[in-house]
Every structure is written in structure tokens, then in C-alpha cells.
Amino acid sequence: MKKVVSGMRPTGKLHLGHYFGVIKNWLELQEKYDCKFFIADWHALTNKYAETEKLKENIREMIIDWLSCGIDPTKSTLFIQSGVKEHAELSLLFSMITPKSWLELNPSYKDLKFNLYYQYLRDFLAGKQVKIIQTPPPESLDQALEKATGKQKNKIFEEYLREAFHRAFYNQKGIDFNWLKEVLVKLGLQKKLVEEAVRNLEEGDVGKEIDTLGFLAYPVLQAADILIYKADFVPVGEDQLPHIELTREIARRFNKLYGETFPEPEAILTEKSRLPGIDGRKMSKSYNNAIYLSDGREEVERKVLEMKTDPQRIRKNDPGNPEVCTVFTYHSIFTEDEKREEIAKLCREGSIGCVECKKLLAERINRFLYPIREKRKEVEKEIGRYEELFREGTEKARSQASKTMEEVRKGMGLWEF
Ligand code: SF4
Image 1 (cartoon, rainbow, N blue to C red):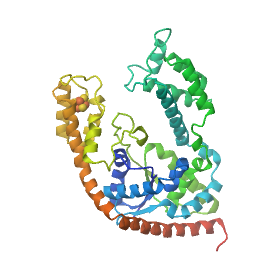
Image 2 (tube, rainbow, N blue to C red):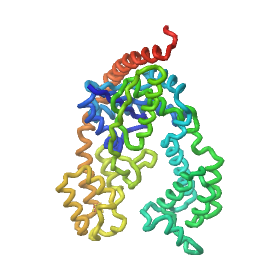
Image 3 (cartoon, rainbow, N blue to C red):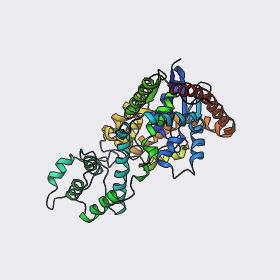
Image 4 (cartoon, rainbow, N blue to C red):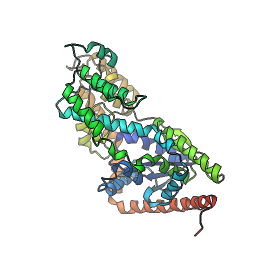
């Protein structure tokens, strides 16, 4: 049977975005392949090394979430990465043959830095009472800049801010802070504030947590996680494709230097979750906008009632546009086709209120979560037994990993103990 390897960093409770982005796919894979799913606790340390007090709790949460969703230890090998020390040994050996430039070019390294910088900028401005409106802007950044002369300044829309920062960040010559300052002032921000925010970015501690050897080298550890089990396939989102390519390159280089040892794994491309957070932004714990798999009925109802709707719709009988409504994006996943079409029609006619529409959605999300909640009760009651299954899985993975390591050590001509 073909082998699949995939892992998840234990960073806290799983939400619906995780379910539709990863877990749903794993549930299908476990029926067809010999799967190894692991809790990537070493990877959680690559940028959260200073916050380990919740690590064990997060691992336990992840065990409960996975099993409640139906990830099945009798079908797949489930284990915890740090229990298989061989991953670290192989990662160390791979780091000897991996040119530094392969890692410095890794796009997700740069993207993460972008996100940290951008988040800082946004939080800084919000902390200074700058109103950053999240409604999509009616025009492009270029059009806004054209208008933004003299007294006719624009409001700062989140999209403008993000786009301006994006252009400044992904600049051929490195981050163009001077250009960014000019643009933000043109868009109506106070010069003093802009100077301060940019100075903090240039000289401050933002992003320092990822300026470590561990972070730079995490794709090498990832290559070890995959190759140590000689995986055939790795399920990944499009943004992770460069990592798989790097894994393949490391395998090729190893094979060329020390003899054919590793197969080159292929990516199984998985669709990104289409579910936004309740405020319409990307669903994320840090935005406090997620619906968790462990949320109770009332919690779900409360969150759905807070969801963003069509901003143009003020009164119940105003015609609405489901295309721009977060609630409707959820309906497109949780609601049966016929009912969904009816809701869209009633919304466009202005004959259904948003509260009623949200209640229908909350009911459907709760229906979807019901079996997960029931299973959760069982898992929580017998957590000791389920943790034991992870221990057994870790042992099983370890015995396979150590076989590969024997081959590796032999191929490399290392001392035999
Ligand atoms: S009726 Fe439903 S789909 Fe239409 S705007 Fe309100 S919440 Fe959105």
C-alpha cells in the first residue's frame, strides 16, 4: 500500500478552518493509504520556543480533536514527533548536505516575516486609535493614491494598507521603507505616526523570533519527517509545494552522494479551506474569529450571530447580496443545495432577515458538530487509553524510522555501534 505522511503543529484547539483544510482530507486518505499522521511538536518550537508552558496541553487537545473527528488509530499510525528521535538525527545529517541558499529562498520564510511585520503595523496603528476599516475599498490602491492629494485624503482601508505594505515588502531591493512612508502619508496617516511605526519595524524586535537557525532549517526537519518513512505522497496546500520540492531535492542529493536510499515523494494537492473567520478575515486564533470544533451549541450560536453580513444591508427588507456575505459563505458549506438557493433568493428579494438566516446556519453547524462533540465526550473520559494509543503509534513509527536510519548510516559510512 502506498505511504502517506503528514503532520500538524500543536498550536492550540482546532477550528473549522483546520477541519476543512486538513482533517477532512486526512479522513479520506486514511481509507486509501498507509497513513502516518504526527503531532509536529518540534516544529511548534521553531517560532514558539519561548512559550512552551502550554505545549503538553496543546498536544493533548490535538489528540482529542483528531480522534473526535474520526482520525482512526486502527487505520493510521498516529504519533508524536519528539518521541521519534530519529527524525532529529536524519535532519542533522541532511543539514550537512543542504546548501544554505536553498533555505534562504524558501518563500514561506519570507511570507511569515511579511505577516509578522504587517500584523505589527496594523496593531500599532489600531493602538493609536487609527480607524482601519475592513470593508473592501471601492477602488485600487493606485486609484486611491491618485486621489489622495492635497486635502482630499482617503480613509485607510485595510486592503490599501496591506497592499501598500505588500509592495514595499516584496521589493526587488529589499523592504522599501521610504516608499511605504510616503504612501501611508498620502493615504491620510499622520506623518509622525508613520515615522514611529516604520522606525520600530526597522530597528525593533518584530520578527526576531524567526531569526533562528531552527526556523531557517525547519524545511530540512520536514524533509526528514517525510523521507524517514519513505513516503510516496504528502498532502499539502499550494503554498507548501516549495517544501515538497526541497524534500525531493534533498532526497536526490542524498541518493547521488551515498547511493539510492530515498524515493522522491509526490504532493497530493489539497484544497484550501474556504471558510473565513466570523469577521470575514482569515480564520485564526490570533484574530479571535474562529469557531472551534470544541465549541458548545450556545457558543456556536453566539459566534454565528456576530458574523459579518452584507454591509450594504441595513433593514430586513433591503435586498442583500449573498456573494459578499460571510454567513452565506458558511451556508455554501453547511447547507443543503436546495435550501441554500432558497436563502440566496430570499436574501436578494429582501424577504429574509439576517438574524433568521444566521439561526438557520447555527443550527446546521451544530448539526455538523454533533457527532464530533459526542465522540469528544468519549475520548475525554478515556483520555489515558487514547494517549496510550499514541504511545503505541510512536513506538511503531520509531521502529520503522530506525530501520531507515540503519540504511542511512551505512550508506554514509558512519561508525557502527
Ligand atoms: S440574509 Fe443571510 S445571506 Fe443575506 S445578507 Fe443576511 S446573513 Fe447574509
